[in-house]
Image (cartoon, rainbow, N blue to C red; front, side, top):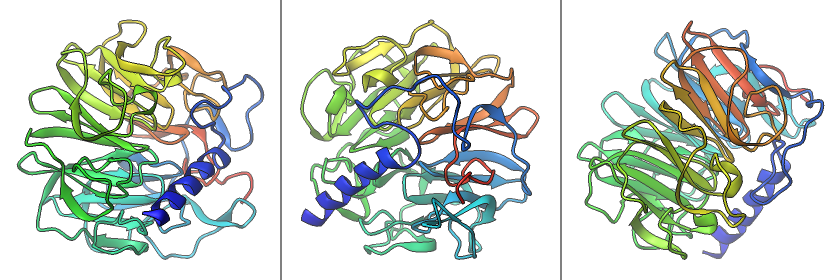
Length: 398
């Protein structure tokens, strides 16, 4: 357990130092000329592959391509790109990285991806889970504490139908074919939802028999949308990010307050958002990320996102959130120090603002300090911070 504590403190410090965003409670974004690695409006990178869906981690990106393969780009310090192929180095030569999408090694083909800060996972068509990257806290689910630059099979006979999108979570959660939730990896804040604070080296059932339809993990916590349209959260409760209105950690799933019925869930670093069954957005947790004015200590229960706009999908990055409206136009709010809002500025946005460019999107994914989407013309479009090439162009300090 002592080793786990040291790991999380070091990782938390790294978040503030790599990628151009502040941590919770840090300085707000400011207007000004963006750094060379920042794009404050959507751009379409010239890539050798065409993506059909996209998933962002903190400093890396993976996508499913038209040729049925998975490709990743960005930071590869721990092997999270899923390949041992030679590549350039970023940050003054300190870290391996690739601004060009590289094929994930192995014969498996994935139809879902779940990325986090330093590792990646994929689900095959028959629900088998594979993970790669940083594994010293059990994040790969293979029963070991070993990192791997290529996919390894998660050690379970269980098949899954959904896998978590993570934001500096240090663990992964997934939903079995029967709706049961499972988590593996670091557990010291109760983020595995199994009633303990232990590391889980293989998928461990969440302490709930409620069938789940969507699941996400953030920094020290997780949330799930049940088939009955409720949301439950568990783990560490800083900024009120469990949404229960009650202070304190919960080692098992606790019902989010408000009595609403929800249709979609997005979990950020220190906040969570959801769409109710009417398409209205609600958020709770870290004040700067919830889409409306909130107490500085955070929104402890779900509060309505400004604008009363109806959305069809929602995605959360570390401190920002984006959603698509019924016309498939993109709107974002929250921390904008790295340009992740996409409105042409570096100004934090309390309320939703339209993403510049008038593009329409099939799908969006928000990462640590960047956002990408698949436009309706099939092209990849990205905005935000690119220190490791995760948006598909060479970083300014290779």
